[in-house]
Image 1 (cartoon, rainbow, N blue to C red):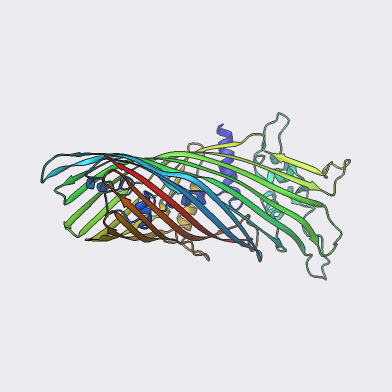
Image 2 (image 1 turned 45 degrees about the horizontal axis):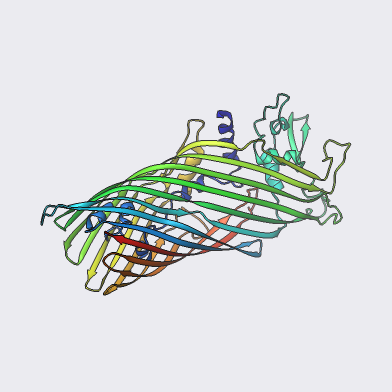
Length: 518
């Protein structure tokens, strides 16, 4: 197992642009959108100074001190994600929907029956869905600049071809568990030995044909497409307590236990290779690369916070969430299938049949640790007779994510995290209007761009709205969250301009929370 873990670590670091990247995942698992009850989410997630909601257990447990009764809650929601991709001048769309249980809680309140000093508090066990990975995308286009074949050739140059194969004892070579190793075993690249320089070099039947030196370079055109399906989430259990002192000061603490599940199935397809020097040259029908990732982990963090009410119409709050320390198991599997039009039974350098398939003989398992950044949040709430306005400001430094493992070094990934990301200031604002037992709410939140420099603005924003009804023994809240974000997908990296898919995601979340005070 140790040998396999070391192979995976090296492989991911080497092909960075093609396989799911550790640097990307460090951000994915750290960048959390506002979570909590329908009430809080309809307020844009603003809650650090608000209190009186089970969501306080995760954001600022001091808010639990504002409960005056015990309660049980259950939340249910639907998420709809639409993706638009533009790749090499071609547009594609995809969509996905999912039902989920984003939260539940039990809050137990105990009053001291005192009129000042320690006036009691609330103990809570809560569950919140803090991140959602459910989304699909697809794109396609015609490329006349490069191919995934060029990536394979760049990666393979100088490598001993035996490193891509099993030896006589069925032991894998150092590059056997790599995408390029699969390409070699699919005849997508082939080796030649340069005796003069005593090294191997690689070519492919799918590279541009030799061009006349007196004419422009040979043009190779091909069709490319990729589909990706991902699912999973991060959930956080919180064991929390918030205390009330004289109805003026509220303090609290929370132990968070986080679970992480993230699965991706993606395929990259190249076909219809066309050559300007020889239009009739058609060596292959297509080849397709399949990759599957199954990432699971658990982690712990700790939250402390306080709220002060200097006057009846103002509350000021602050909370600190420590880094989350994850233990993660990463299972990776891959395969390549190619369908050739050019094959030769007698020549070992050609496939002997049209259909060729190579895949890992076993999934690769990697175990490692991830520390995500801590978060500092401050906020204020202005309270009036018919409602309130609340706002939060959150500070987070994404460069503080860090990997480590007992099986190898992640120093290159940690260095890239520091170089690619930056600190960010996120903000949330929301308002509630009250009329007898009815509530109307609205809000907005903004996640700043976490990248140090990028041609694409990676900030995310959401507009929220909701309503509620409250009685003595029951309440119901509904929320709608509409968010948008942009991203880029680079399927592989080569010398020269990389192919880039520009993506836009529109997400709609509809959520209801049912509460039963007692």
